Length: 254
Length: 108
Image (tube, chains in turn green, red):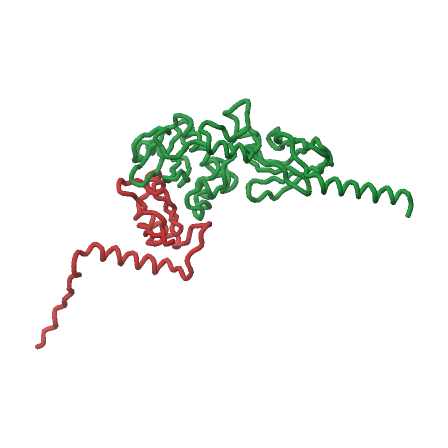
């Protein structure tokens, strides 16, 4: 065996042993710079490892991927994205996935935020006032990652029909995106002064935003029944229920 | 877990998950998987009555509208609508249905 071959085998052995014994850890959280049709995601790891991003429109099915070089400072640009669209992603290497989150390309909305850590999610659940999202300079521009659709939509088997009918009102690109927007609308209503009506008969909460004319109805557990923009100017006035404030409701803003 | 179902007042589909209207008149916002009527939207927002929508649905061929839910096995819109019309008619009759009598032809 030649000297060169021995060196190659030795280098492979060292690399394999190093990666097998040391679990790669991410330092901090991924940073996203979103443009209209592209987004650059960067993150750091404690050791050199591969660069891979899985991304897509559905958080449960990240069907696209992009890869880069072996490094500890990773940066990768996703191209060919749709403007004003929310994408979900997970960063890592070919061996492991380290962190994930979502971002929205510029156009209709411009924001980027990584998913909160598990610890922060637990804290947000048990400590009132603890924010679930990472610190951001402009809170109004942050897109809070929504929980899985099964936790936010009332009757899952009806979601496709509601999306088919009303998804275009909000430029939703998928049923999950539509459900996530409906969930965010409720969070906004609970943390701001959007008018809300509670129908005590069945616990339905109806929310309306006069500026955008967005309307949504939620069941007593806070799961979405529908989300759309009514055509009728008097639609909100004709809705039953008494006006309520967020403090009177059983479910709270996350 | 057994779930109770409700009947669509437009097409007679009897698998709605909620009553179309609650006691105070609040709409369920549910979209009937069969005819596509959305309670609280098709009527309250677009101003289309049950009867008008039913006529449109029939004129359109009584097609199954949901893309997320499949029609029940053996689903027949004509049978569904006929059964619904019969039940609606019988519900209007209080007590025992009136007897229908025919005059016997006179024998010369």
